[in-house]
Image (cartoon, rainbow, N blue to C red; front, side, top):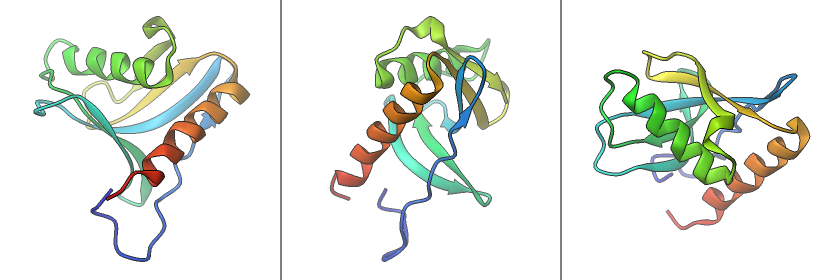
Amino acid sequence: MGDRARGRPAPQLKIRQTETGIAIPVRLSPRSAYDALEGVEDSQGDPVLKARVRAVPESGNANRALEALIANWLDVPQSSVAVIRGAKARIKVVAIVGSPVGLSALVATRLAAFCESPD
């Protein structure tokens, strides 16, 4: 997260709890050189999880790659992760099925690891 201004805290991702789990906003960059989640960034005033995938944005390939990436990051089954909004947009909402409290804590823990890594 080296693009963050010096002395400013990282934006806090808004994790929305749903009846079946959680939903998180993601900014996806397809056709990247690698698959990775890169922390939280500000996108037009809203904090989003920054993700890159090698897949192209055709026939849902990039969305499926994003779902797999998030499932792997959270160590949950890929079937429990789905893009629920923004299928053809760069900013998406991804739902993860499971315990809302447990998943929220897990995401917070994984996000904290980004803050601990050197810039």
